[in-house]
Length: 245
Image (cartoon, rainbow, N blue to C red):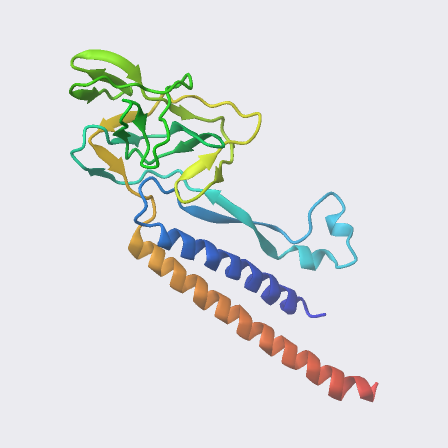
């Protein structure tokens, strides 16, 4: 079979999957703390015997979409004026206790619950780096760049800002919360600063996201047209040329 057919086929598969990713990124461009996902590619065949496959080495020269990876690029910091809102500048995540375990987020839209705990918008307790809930007594709240929280001039806790070993792939759960792989331990972030009265916007620009979506759609359509051309040629060969042999 013509190698061009494989090229068009793998291109269509990759662009279709990338189109879904671009659509999700654009849909969450206004979600605080959202980490955009970027596609990466792999070979069609994997493993030590890939090039010995009966499909031939030529097939493996065309890439398939291997999946998506989170972009850790910095989002814009937007001032809110709420003293309990926090934004991270640099690499790191806030920790909070979800019903199914500890989760991580860049969305620092926090507030004080009726029992005094610092919680997320969903009412889930925000944690210290040691994994403990943060209790805020009544009074004016001040947050330092290291995450330390002071109430009425006295330090009461420090919000946990953690990071992970290089190469760790977090799993998205919803729009802006993430799960760490089993066996991976979060460590305190050393190069992150906390900004009080601000939240981090998504690291996906609306304009760029729209352009990406249009580009992926056009590329997918182009691959679809290429497949149609090859399919027509194969049919012609099967119906007109093979009977002559």
